[in-house]
Image 1: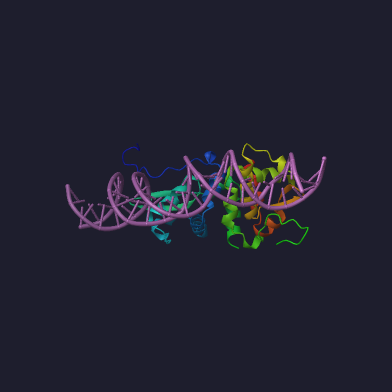
Image 2 (image 1 turned 30 degrees about the vertical axis):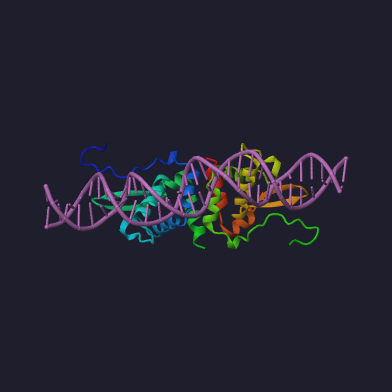
Length: 108
Length: 108
DNA sequence: TTCGATGATCGACGATCATCGAACATTGAC
DNA sequence: GTCAATGTTCGATGATCGTCGATCATCGAA
């Protein structure tokens, strides 16, 4: 239970507990990789609604959950709206160069 | 058909035709990542039989096929025996820094 | 040519995955 | 309190995956 007045919101793992295989699995899917690239393109966060992909809403929520569990992105709730952003700083500490390299490889 | 006297052997894709997602999928499995690390640890190639993992022979063959199709490794047949090696040089040209970064992240 | 060794392939299985629509929970607005 | 908006969760479905034993194809040796 979350304390009163505090949004529970989705949970985020500590990066220490995230396995490399988990991150790779999360990135090894076209839609998710696309989302990560999308987030990397802009600095800061992006509104849920601005992620428009040709998939159902529940599917998007599913993919975001997997990315979240892999420690790749952070979910912030503000009222009824959500904003997502990359955990690139933390990720760099745990998996140095990984995110940058993958994104660079994808841009070719 | 292969010319007479030439072993057909397994096929290897041109790296230009390999997608990043395919490589990531291939690496996103514990056993396969372990094999890649094993191969990276030593220079050059490794005999099939020296890859001893707690899996059935057909399963190992299956994993090697996936790694091969992802352009990650090369299969050389010599008589009845096989030798596998990383395509690290070529891979560096297609996906710069990817293999090295992943292996580095795994060693932590 | 026959035989044994070595991998590749096949068929089957249980598990996991991506996907969807529907139902639910939470929040802000009226 | 009621309502609409926004994401999450649930249940189901079809596809893919990892795994295995069994079979097959290829090659060197006897």
